[in-house]
Length: 509
Image 1 (cartoon, rainbow, N blue to C red):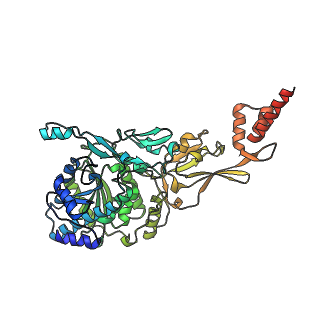
Image 2 (cartoon, rainbow, N blue to C red):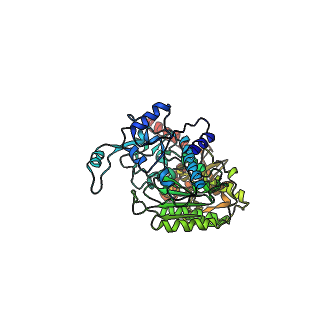
Image 3 (cartoon, helix red, strand yellow):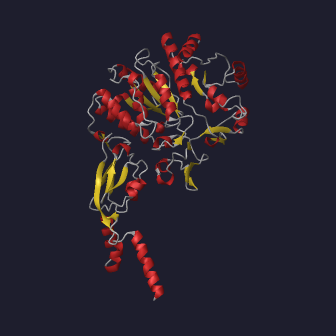
């Protein structure tokens, strides 16, 4: 313990590391906080630590906010008969990863915390019955209104299994009473407007980065295991390092690639379908695994490095997987030159391109397997009227409606398309088609022009005012002839002026 403390303080000068017994007792924690004048950021102990902390008083009355503290079940993680040097190195990494994770913690606002009662199951003791009558607090995601597109984007609402994302007064919000806190919506949102205070992308990336510290040294080859909170996976090899998440559905392709980019040689998703409290379809994260596997295959890297396991027979599956990873050559990624992810926009295209460049792989080919997080649009130019409604509805600006001189254009950028299909649904001419596919050579590429047409000019003032194809389509649908047809060739401004003159003329008559 002393060696671990010295190492942590060396890694982060000024870090206060306290070694004490009975941390799961609130009075002990209060005494430590008073004596050392610190607020805990990370607590390490036994398996009872997290559950006991959850039973303490309301956050506003507690010595510290339990939801603001990272916990490490150090006893369980170090229980197997590791060699002493592996045991110490594993403990260092697990604690350091939590320290790095908590550096990205930005607090839990009141709107992201809700009270609930834990329903007891089966036979319970009197103590359990009493505890079940005390409200507990659960942290749920919330929406940052300054980033949210509101009614324009329906991606998170269509992807929420519990229908907890609702519209109130033209604003989108999360109904915390119905929210399961699975976190899947945080991955779906293309604007990063949904924030999960305890499981943000920044926190998960920081924890993974901490686990892969000096990944060319001990505990090789490093394997990251994403573990759903319902699972009780066995710790069996010191080089397999866990990250606990509410649901595997919130694991994005970008996070998996980020781990490989930082030096991980394998990546596992461990679920428990039998104990899953959300009862969600596992096909979405298995589809994510399949997409990443095909991308690795495209790069000439063994796709079996990334895999999803149910915890059934895990004690046999994990050792075999670890042995397989140990038998493979190290990947060609350089951890010291990890890819920077943009603060704004979609980070996945930047990660894919940068990793391709590191491998010296030409950016070509198509990937259509699994849950592809990109879409490819096709357009029937014979039906399109250039109305631009599809571009106005696109939540990621993958479609843009351009007006240049006397022409109108629709351009499409695949690296920005998340395949939501809103443009296809809204198109009045039903001329758009969407395919879930990644064309690697279209990343960081000039936008593709998928439609170009002429503008109609007002027959009175000569100003271009609408796509000619749209005027022709409206005239055909209305069967307009004569004066009605001429009015369609007049801009709204001149049309209103003409209407005013007719009215005055009629009054004068």
